[in-house]
Structure formats: structure tokens, C-alpha cells
Length: 296
Image (cartoon, rainbow, N blue to C red; front, side, top):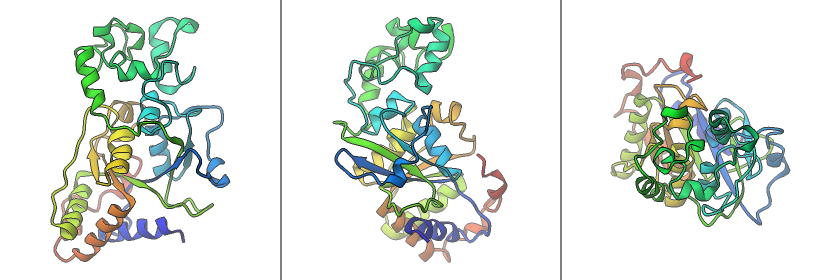
């Protein structure tokens, strides 16, 4: 049994609900110059791109995905995860999941020029209506953009934490079942119901005496809020998922995301185990109803 599988099983068991399943994704960063195990490189998608939201969802379902700048399907995620420079003026690729939606609604076909990382960073993409950049819209002519004007969008982007300068060559997202090679994650992402978030916070509080302070916005909630922020700050964060996570990756309506550095996740598990007598999760309304809803 791998280390991560053992801790994952302890986390589930600490809820005292037999058969409980909580979608779980492990995330490992490989900086430029690091040796990426061949078993990890073998998990690069062939002939398609995936957003970080999709990769996170697929890993939680038992798959494994190795994202690089060549196969990541979201420019914003490539920035957040340190795969591309946030001020790069050239488009990241010609056919990405996110920008293909723009191409389709723009009506420009082969004449469409995908937005560059700088277009995201400067607020042009997220304030496409105010910027007069209708080709960057996602929902046609009536798309208001994600912010009221470019200045507001640029301010919002500046608060979306990112691994910059871009130092990463690959980001590996995998499930606890992955055992081709032992990989210790940097961050774990849990897709929880509110009742399960309650128990996680209680385990954290039991171990530390601290409240859980979270930072969230309306965009980049998986790649920035749940992965990059815990990785850079060393602290747990939570989010209710964002536009891409809901519409592209199809995270269910009763799920929220929790991102935890590996050492913090281990501490939470130990806190949950030690406090089962004081926090009887199995008695919480709805605590035993997750198993048939695993696809959420």
C-alpha cells in the first residue's frame, strides 16, 4: 500500500461511516530540472488538452493526469500552476479547451487568435465586454464578462495567487489508487459536502485551536485557490468551485473544494481520529448519504 493510500483510508475511516466516499485528488509539482518519473510522464494525455479542473475531477474518479504547458487546456491554470509566464504575449497553444469555447462563439473560425497569458493578466479576457474584446466572450453577444471593467478585472487577477515566475515543468494529479510508483503529494484536493467540511474543520481545530481562514474569488478556484495557494502559503484553503469547475468539469451542486498541503492534511486526519468521541460525525444529518452520490 502506498503512503497516500494509507492516509486516504485513515481520513475516510475517521468519519465513522462505513462505505463513505469523498472525491480525493493528490497533486505533485515538478520544477524545471527535477526528474519526472517515467511512470508519471506516461500519464500525459494524448491528442487532447485538459483544464486543471477536468484533471482534478478525473483524478478523483481514479485516473492520473500529468499536465505540462503542451497539454494544459486552460491559460489561467497554466499561469497559476507555474507552467507559463503570466506576462507572455504569445498564445499558449492553438487548441485549448477554454479558448476553443471562445473560438466557437466568436464566429471567426481560423481567423480567431487565442488570448495570451498577458491578455488574462491585464484584465482583457475577464472584462471582455468593457474592453471591446468580444472574441474573448464565452456566452455570445450578451456576455458581460466576468468583471465590470478592465481595471476591476486586473485588480481581481492580481489577487489570484500564482506560482510566478513560472518554474514548473509538470503538475501530476492522481488518485490514492495510483501505485505505479510511490509519489508523495505537495497538495491534496478534497471535494466535500458541507457536512464533511464541518468535520474537517473540527479536526483541524481540535489539533491546532485555530480557525480556518480561507480566501476565495469567483474564478480560478481550483488551480489558484485549491492548489497554488496551499502550495505557496502552506495553509489549508477552501472554495465553492468556479465557472470552469462547474460548467466544464461538472462538479456537482452539493460539493465544495478543500486544498491542503500534505503535512496539513496529515495533521487534520490525526485531529479527526483523536476527536471522534467529541464530534460524532455519524450522527450528523445526511452524514451517511454520500456513497450513492460519488459522481458529484
